[in-house]
Amino acid sequence: MKRTFILCLMIASIAGYAREYHVSVKGDDAGTGAESAPFRTIGRAALAAFPGDVITVHAGVYREWINPPRGGESDGRRIVYRAAPGERAEIKGSEPVRNWQKEKDGVWKAVLPNTFFGDYNPYVDLVQGDWFYGHGHKHHTGEVFLNNRSLYEKDSIDRVWHPEADPKATDPEGATYTWYCETDGEHTTIWANFHRFDPNRELVEISVRRTCFYPEKPGIDYLTLSGFHISQAATQWAAPTAEQVGMVATHWNKGWIIENNVISHAKCSGITLGKERGTGHNVWLNDRSIDGSLHYIEVTFRTLRNGWSRERIGSHTVRNNEIFACEQTGICGSMGAAFSLVENNYIHDIWTKRQFSGAEIAGIKFHAAIDTRIRGNRIHRVGRGIWLDWMAQGTRVSKNLLYGNDIEDLYCEVDHGPYLIDNNLFASARNVNDVSQGGAYVHNLFTGHFLVLPEKTRYTPYHLPHSTDIAGLSIIQSGDDRFYNNLFLPVRPDEKQEPPLGLVAYSHTKYPSFADGNVYYNKAQPFEQEANRVALPDFDPQFGIEEIGKEVYVSFVLQGLSGLATERVTTERLGKAKLPKQAYEQPDGTPIVIDTDYGGYARAQHPAPGPFEQVKDGPVRLKVW
Image (tube, rainbow, N blue to C red):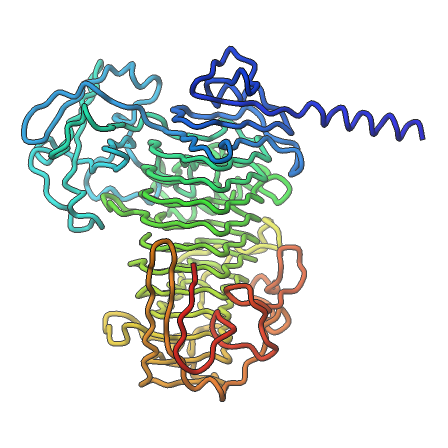
């Protein structure tokens, strides 16, 4: 009894040491961090904080790179970085620039000593990396911002004097606001075309930091970052074979929560949940003697030797963030996104400038999303919506809204499954690019095309169930897919440049595929072996999607559902993916029953097809965001 009392006293004493540190733009780093004597910088508070502590940041702009020296001990003893409730705390990777010198016709010049940039000058550093395509132009990691809008870099001063709208950009008029830079041993000079604006009277900023929140070393686990506005960092291209540094980056750690933030205007990526440098950094760029896919296999094995496992890496939560105006990805991660939850984020306007491209551009781009759940996100105007590249096993993509993406909504590349795609709305011209096998598509709404291809030149890994351990490698024969209770409501049935609508392409895949309970309208072609289906090729469902303020509505018309006999979809019904021999189940191995719809409403025993349970023949209009 005495020992128990002493132990309880010790626990209470330890808990009592947890502190709240305050940060204010009116503070002083020589202070104590108390509310009455706040620190001036978030970095100073980071040095003071230990597991269980909270750092509360008050309103203002903080121009710094936060490099946390330590993390929490567990999910229950985190270090929490939070914006003060109701206050706008901004973390910026930029600095304001004043004293612009006018040249002529809206063009101004700023001459900065190289000492202004410290040990990193983004106007020397070029965007580069594996699978990056600059299209014959140099692209610096730096950016110029006019009133929080980024200008377009050009590779000659003449293109600043005489700007032309870029037809590839989603904002052609904005693309005429341009800049160019030169650097010598002492100075960096930036010319910018601000048109009618006087930069000495407006807010003009330039990116100077490569990141905003990123620990230099791994081993910084269980951090929470909540409620900030984070922007304008000179982030580098985040290839899967490289150290991946976004404006917010977890750096090969475990158990972070990134929530309720507004993240925007990264040169490349907003959030990275990715790899560190020691297992390889742009290895293909540095060695072209073998193919990039072979390099990535080698990198994967190196990460395993470096501790890539459920116990040490991943298990992050990224939720309720708004992410936009990033030119590579909203969220990406190679290996480090495994076992994570990405939910209720609003990701939009990614890769809008289109001055460069590459094989890593999407709203969400994950390699090795093992047991990762991507649910409840709204993703539009991002080029590619969700890209699951290599080793999507145990992955579940559920209840997401994707539309207005001009490449496709979902790209599954060289995955062997099992991965589950359920209760989503796919409403772009192309919905799915499927270069994988072992997927299950259940209760989705599709308005566009599928592209279905094998991939017989690359051997890619599959894993032991719920593990990073590799069980084998194989090419993609295509097939081994399941399609149950989906709605196909094509909007553009006559686009001849696209593959056929519907599931006809799965009728003759190398590995057998399976389908039941699907509804096909408006020239969508059924899976040939599917007996239980509704197919009305001449019926136009009149699908539409409408944004009203911050809300999104869909409308369509249904017909012929009364004769369709559907069944609930369960782990038992889905079976196992062929190569991994793994069931479509929860990350903890327990069975899945798809018994709720997109909105969380209960499914009937014989459920309605598509993502909405409460529909029947006739017109439908629903709020979906």
